[in-house]
Length: 207
Length: 207
Image: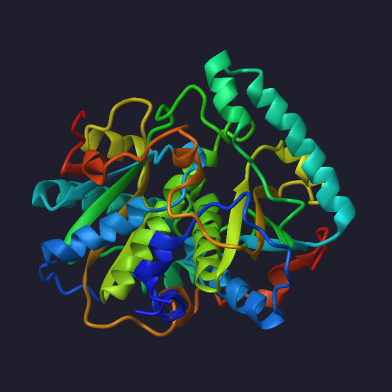
């Protein structure tokens, strides 16, 4: 699939997962694409935990539902009503979950490009996630990034060692379709900002 | 260009910039691709500062050279010798620089998906950067991410308001070619890790 077509088709999927299997060679192409991302000092500080164990998925899903309630409790009544219509995860319906982690010790101590910006390694992990997301889209699969969780819960659930940080929980799998409009816009939560408002020339300009 | 071809051709460019102009419609396609990235709560918390002012570029380049020395001073002799052969930026040779920033207030206070993970907004900015990087590659342009700088220096240089965080300085422009092998591997700094070492099943496994 063409790059631009893939970028503009990509969606953050919650409700369209079918649960159908993912061919092994498809998954390999997707993970190889993620692993080809740029990284500070060529550290490739990411790891991918592939999760199909129902017990692990169910435990995470229960935790996410609790965090949904935590967020809901911070909202005023009209906002809470709008939120009530929005599905926030496809953990149980999607074929596979992937946890993506960041290891700051990889390539240490002399990480080229990180001495002044400690978060540069974390940024690299996100670049790999976007490669993964686009590759899945090109394979006609959906990805949904779930972020209603506490990092220490996920660390314990997946036996992630101290010092390694979970960055994302992604739901992956075949979908009935990808929506044209992002879910949060379809549900009246937010509308997209015009690109022109995000552009500045030479120095920051107040908008 | 095909997505997978783009992902695998993409390089972090330092030395191959020609300085030739970028057609306006090409730049618009690239920025539109960046702006189409996913974002937590549909906040689109990124801004892009397009920099062609020679004074701004020169001031940043001088700062980067100072930070190069700071990093160099932390290295043992053999590592410093290897580092001496590695070019770390193409600020002066590339056609255009882009600073990418993160605004945590966008969509606040009720950012859907960020109550438990404060960095989720920062992650969104990185997803936009990877879209931008791939789009530039598909347009046969190079991108180089420069991270030898202090955030407070860049904030002052570009009049970035308090609370808005600079995330990246990217050099963009036509190139003579893209290298097949990443610079840091070509220069013997690091070799790439096999994908298999980054994969785990259901729970973390020590490698």
